[in-house]
Length: 228
Image (cartoon, rainbow, N blue to C red; front, side):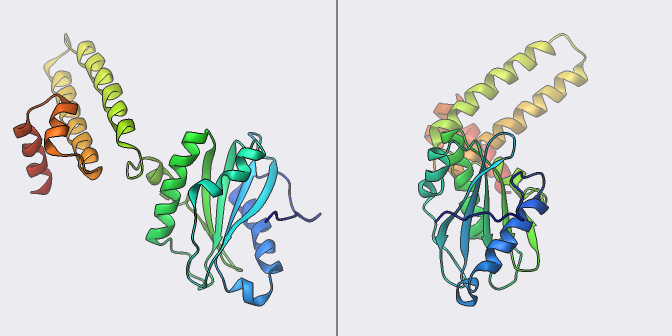
């Protein structure tokens, strides 16, 4: 459902306060019954921050709302939005993001990347206040998450990072021993992180060994070290 802006609403988003100012009024326009349900809205903008649309994506119960990721971006694609902001309310008054809130944001970040549409923030609002995932650094954390990244993309990242590490090793080959040691430590830590990422994607130890071009025993050693 398309949400119409009033003459009092700004047409450009410059800060999270601008977003809340608009969405607080939208929430308060609903009748008392609907205010007690969770809403999920999306604000679509062009690159300059001009609001192209505000869409009510889903209306749920008093404690949750079901979201189909592709439906969230349907209008964004139709209206050529390049940046979007997700907004939903908590009728309970709590501003603490739930695991479900974090998971859907994580998934939508990945869908947006496929569509070349940036999900720049997610706000949880109540009639009196709000919290911004971006302002609290939660958005930065979710953008680094590999939870919903397809396995083939994780492998591509590994290949790119292997090439980068190889270049860095070559650059420090003739440097002092201290610099060389730092390079080795970074390579080891990078290898451990990538192994853990593949394990999270439920890739077997044997497959990890093939992808990383290392022995099965080395993979097992890394996992044992991480779990100890």
